[in-house]
Image (cartoon, rainbow, N blue to C red; front, side):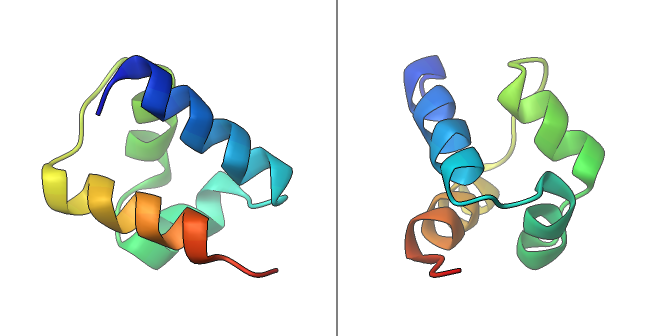
Length: 61
């Protein structure tokens, strides 16, 4: 996932008022990893990236 895609995903998450802690629980990763991922300090495997993208895009809260 490119840095631009990460930024757009983070913006979508914040726009939908999703909490990083709750998103992390839903996709079964640590909140710390999710935070580092959005700050471009760590990477996630493709499966987790896809789960994250799918969860945020399909969230209807």
